[in-house]
Image (cartoon, rainbow, N blue to C red):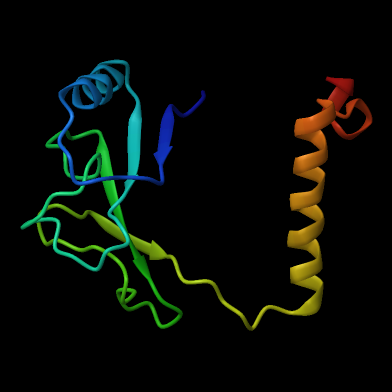
Length: 126
């Protein structure tokens, strides 16, 4: 079984009927739409940020938390328009090994985008 999920780490303050209908159509196809609540530090209940604030039950609006699991100072919020919060502040206390691993992974992803799949690194040579 495969999960049908769209990650929307973007948003804006303009309501867009075409965008709304596209997300509604995705809902009708069983797609979960995870949307960023926004990074303006404002209340989405008072000033809706879209797509997070569309009134569709397949949208999960996600705020950002800091290293202490408190709402990040830049994160949008809303008691009725934001569903959950997740870590969203970069931790600068990462070890050298973790930073090297992240950097190496990013480099491999850039190389793969340029030259295509690397067969010997994929399962069964796919």
